[in-house]
Image (cartoon, rainbow, N blue to C red):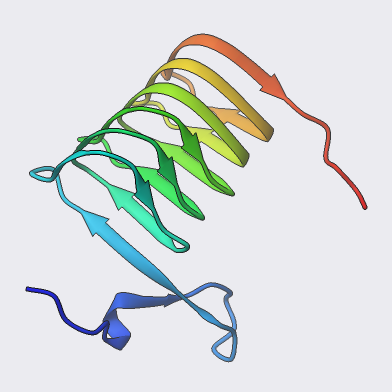
Length: 127
């Protein structure tokens, strides 16, 4: 059931073949989580979670339902999300249903997305 990750579990973080690899977690539509989820990799979420997500890259698939707050570098929502998103880049696909607050440097909302709440595009912070 639990095993060491194989090379199939890893994907390149950059397009070059010499760059670092990043873990990828795929949680299918039958997965139900009650609690918080933390990952330093890519998470494709198709199940249901009641809790907060802190990840590097989050993809809420069309079957995904998130009830909680999300902190990530990049977030793509194709399913349902009820909570707050704090990220650098956010994409709300045409099938997205989002209720809550989205705070990001870049926000893309595709035609057909259903958004109820507050959107805030922040200025890029430079050092």
